[in-house]
Image 1 (cartoon, helix red, strand yellow):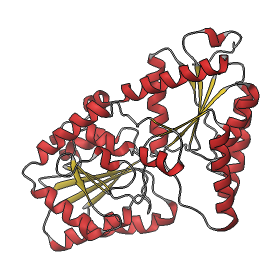
Image 2 (cartoon, one colour; image 1 turned 45 degrees about the vertical axis):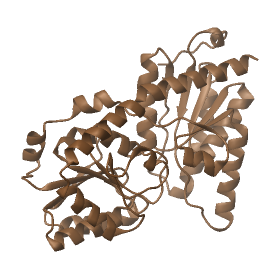
Image 3 (cartoon, one colour; image 1 turned 30 degrees about the horizontal axis):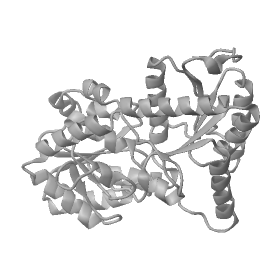
Length: 367
């Protein structure tokens, strides 16, 4: 929803928000965050827009420059119909948008979902400079996890949230999903997100293969999300070699529709903030096996809502999967995960926090 008028709008109750993100693929937690927050804001009569100008067909070296040019153009064209520019991540796109926003007298906000690994050399120095300048130039910075705030040394924490009721209502019946996927009484583990090394997917394959070789558990692995190009061939090979024990479900907007078939959710990441995929799985009532990175330990209590395993340890991950398959309390743990998701990570609370922040930003602009 967008309007062209801007004169006097700051005196009205609700702001008009332009969302910007460098991520166009739906497997991204950032994309999910933006999409869901926009939906909730619009139920509160907040006008939002999200231009889609990410170019996948150009060489990667040119993508950042093209995104920045298109970002500048998008902000300029909407200068009379927006009050707040809400960026994602401390990337060059955010610096460009916040710089122009400040020139135009708009409120600027960056939500930080995670920090990338440090690149060496001049590239790393440049990216670090972009991060520092982005922090300096925006009006407000939000971190989705307290661990990120501590790393950056500044910012307000607003945890990610998910649409708990919508997730539960969208889930298909367990027997129906299992029948459609040809699953009998196997123990089903789910991974959803970007299928990358950074998300621990190679560690996941190592753990699953150890289990299949040992025969301790009749494991079935369901994978949702976009596959990282540099491990695409390896993933394809593992899928073929699994003889149907691994199923790639593709990139789905609502992977949780199939979570009724699952027994546990896996996320052996090397780095995270507060991952949307974990919160979605908790809302669906799944126990979680994850690594204790970012603010995951804030959501996952050992033996209560799931289990935590060391980063990069395929043996420990495999043992945790086997233990989960034998856990008499697994259903109870899943119910507790759902209760925690409802009490602490429902999107309604996240939306209220952002509405309050938007209001404060508008008031500060008005002096």
